[in-house]
Amino acid sequence: MTTPSVDAIVTRLAARSISWDRMRRRIAAALACERPEHEAECHMGPYVAVARQRGAGGIELARRVGAALGWPVLDREVVDLVAAHLHVNPSMMDLLDQDAANWVTDVLGDLMPHAVITRDTYTHELRRVLQLLAVHGEVVFLGRDANFFLPHERGLAVRVVAAIGDRIARVRARGGLDETRALDEIKDADRARAHAVSHAFDCDVEDPLYYDLVVNSSRRPIEELADVVVGLCRTRWPHREPDLAGTPGSG
Image (tube, rainbow, N blue to C red; front, side, top):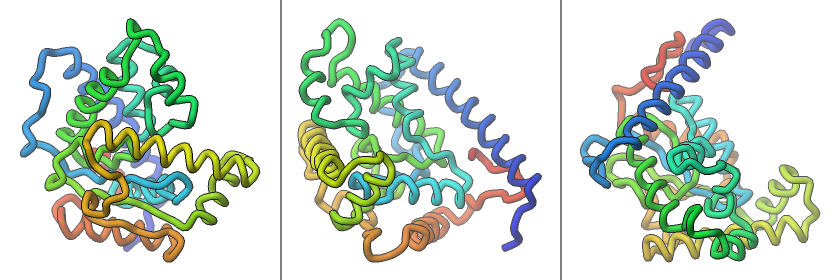
């Protein structure tokens, strides 16, 4: 494969930014309209949903997959769309968003004024946003339990796991924490996610049967695991190769 020039890369990044702005406006307009709660599943996808243990390297894997496919990686952007539709400060979503969860979430989440927003309201709107983005297609979702909200046959669900020692090392490197605080953050995140998935979907987040692929970043490098995911996507959706000249279809 020919390495794209700097100009081609810049052009492609600019096109991706424009595409995301356009996508965001369309989703906002759709949310403002009266629509069925569930979009037609046959119109969704393709998408990749990356779930991960805290500190397992899922963020890097998602970004590598998105870059290779030319698809936007949607993380905090999903929450921002929900906040915009509910007319609340995006930072308030951290009390309800399981990807930002820690022990404060469970304590304060139930104490938030019901006139502002409830966890059930957030979950309902999160479902709508994820479904609308999936209808747009060609996106990589990072977290937000997207694989549980969306039809599995229309996308690829990947879970990234790692040994606890490697997870602690990543969390410490990212947040400048000592080992004890890093371990506490990991335990809090694991507990919050397990509770949220069990409550919302009556599922065990650790069950591998809810994913197409479970990869262990303690056994293989992230870049190699990302290549596996990209290979599966290109096999499943061979007509959706990215345009390296700088005009990706939706990236």
